Image (cartoon, rainbow, N blue to C red; front, side):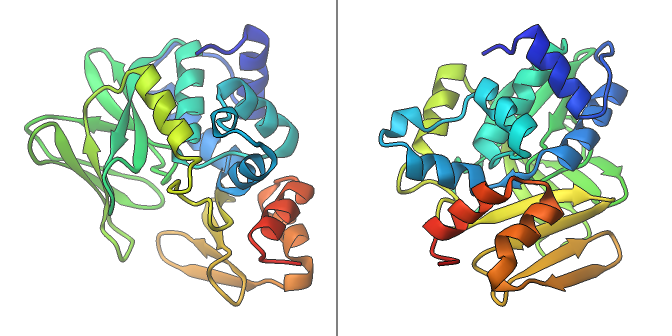
Length: 269
């Protein structure tokens, strides 16, 4: 999958970055910019599923994903999100592959592996992990940033425990370091729009805003925004009668799309 040079330039500008030669520093800059501009959200997927009759037409491939991000401020959940980011990285000269990994359920979370100077790095913008983490087969990796102390712990059979410090659930997911062919990954994206797909049953939005990770989930009532940094949690209560507007103002996502997703999930009437 490719992005046109023009669209690639628009995306880089949208992220507030410039084109550089591939490096770990540039990868970290792109990750940091991405999670502050592109939300992890189910709004766009819910709307697409409800307005598209055929499941095979539902997936928002990178070109559509990025066009909507630029126009509506949307993003996606992990399957489409990581594919969009990985495709951008390819256009910027990075090499690597996509993986499908385990959480509570098998094969439910994706991430990119980027190779620089024969060293592998985990790049996952959907949890989000806020920096690239080096992967070693026989060595524990530890990295820190303003949110967490991260650990990659080798287990067995290309499997690694990905952990974070300042969270009640320490283990984030199990990385299965096996390259997924593009066609197989595309099939997984489409399958995620079926009845068993993830997060089609709720409106969820996550985005880093002013160095605080802000979250909303329509299954948590009364409705509220939750903001986290390494040392504190902040809550902002939301009124149901202006829920779509409040979420739009906070996350920068088109209000009409949010309202339509909330309506489809019968969160608002």
